Length: 71
Image 1 (cartoon, rainbow, N blue to C red):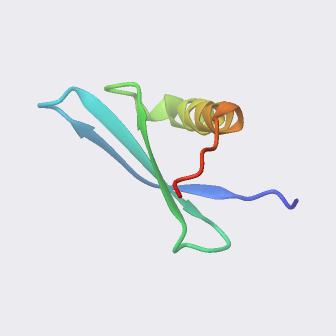
Image 2: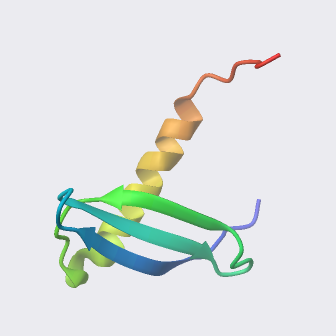
């Protein structure tokens, strides 16, 4: 499988909920999007490290998930 390149398309802090969110878009297909919650108040110089952590955490969660039939 070819490697994908993700671009950080957005980064926002929700001060009332004390949450931060990072939004990604696939470089080869910008219609494909992913949003992940990241550490609150993340400074910009830690953006790349936190992006990698968020994507790796999702990958691990999906790899370990149990698939069930809905029918």
